[in-house]
Image (tube, rainbow, N blue to C red; front, side, top):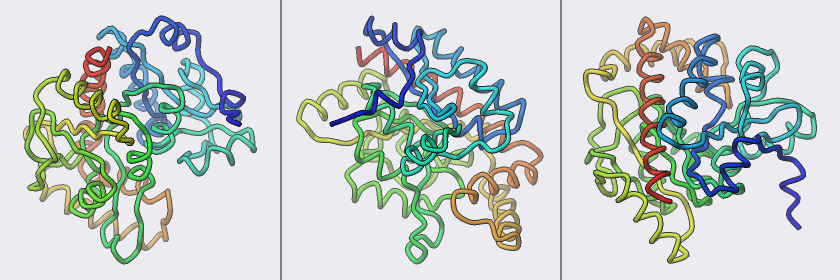
Amino acid sequence: MNDFSNYTIISDRVQKAIEAKRPLVALESSVIAQGLPFPINLETAVKLEEIALETGVCPATIGIINGKIKIGLDLCDMQKLAQEEGIFKVSKRDIPLVIAREGSGGTTVASTCFIASMMGIKIFATGGIGGVHRDGQNTFDISPDLRELSHNNVIVISAGPKSIIDIKLTLEYLETIGVPILGYKTDYCPHFFTNLSNYPVTMRVDTPEEIALMAKIKWNMNIPGGILVVNPLSNEECLSREEFNKAYHQALQEGEINKISGNKVTPFLLEKINLLTDGKSMKANILLLERNVKLASKISIACK
């Protein structure tokens, strides 16, 4: 027996969109709670919803508020996640734990993907996905984002694995678990806010309609699991690989000195890299988020 609905609140706007069968796009909230500093996090969250609405799509920002999964955060919810202390970073494993504590948290790619799938929302826009961390073949530090991508029938639009992730191992892992990687107007996988990698995508696509058709055929054939769409920035908008690597290695050393571990590693590294690049990485991060929401909105319309 599935009691998922007992733990959820759906906003009026999202509920009306579901009933009217309007296109929707799911958005995660870990970027609000852990990904960006205040007030930029709040401003970005509001802007992302505006982009979806301007495209004719209903945004459904997902988070946990006072022990309830909320699909369609309002401004007060976003302010809570953006400003308050004690906000959890919620992956799929953490959902029941945070609900039991009546806590509030920002949902990651893994948990947002799961919740969106449970709600029948097929399109989800994010910045970058987690993946296999460097030296992951020895540490087994692998993000649950990848597993949820293979388990849920959702199209996830991102700028590829985050720059701190080992892209080669991550793409190998995605191939193993059967997740196709579609490059939007690119033959190679982007690496978040750094230059394109040298690793090819599964297939290049040039229109939202192509993506929608591939997803339709996949799920009509009962081939379960998601599709990862990667949407790169231009070289002019990215950090150079050299600039990133210099900042990354310094941030990594500081993380080791401060004994940063677990789900605190990624937010720590991204914050340090932003400081070491004089804000360039955050600027690129926000830009790719906006681009991904716009593309996701077009795909959502094409799926209708």
